[in-house]
Length: 269
Image (cartoon, rainbow, N blue to C red):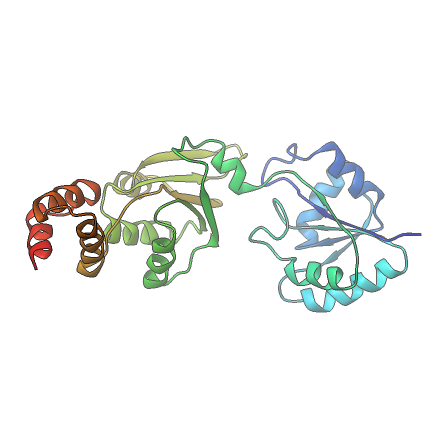
């Protein structure tokens, strides 16, 4: 019999958010590789799924890849699920999928819920562009280095409740209190909440209200200049187009919120 391997999206909170096709596949496979069997067992019991469950997470993924490959070569049907959402989207699975592809195993995706797209569907944006960086680093400097790479597009990341305020304070320090962001927590669950406001207002809100559950954050696209060297680069570009120092100071001041006199002095020099 031909082997079959499925990557199956599962609910991110509300167990009703699972597709009919996902239930059908999980009922017909021989085994399900789970990030945590205890979590998947709850879903399996609700929908009468009786396939054998075994763990496959970031700490044993390489070892499990060999086991799964062996089962597939025996003609078994296997599905991969994460605790919530779509595998490989800030979840384990990349090592396993790479192994299977190298061995010419066909990968079949069973699409469904993903926290990133669920979040985006509630946020009005000027453009469709976005960058997803997974869980943001804990280090403040690394956070800003990554966000600077994507400052001209909408940037989404995950964060834990106990670190959210610290991360937002770092954003406020580097990009200003008026930086526009969106924060979502407990998506699809009873206490789901999405806030869109300035970073300072959201910090104040969560300083007064308890933070629990999974957190997703979006930093809206914004133009920022971090130091004088960046200002000088902008001045050079405008001078090449024959703009005067006065015009350059007005343009850059309006675009980036920088003091006009400072820009004018740099332009003269």
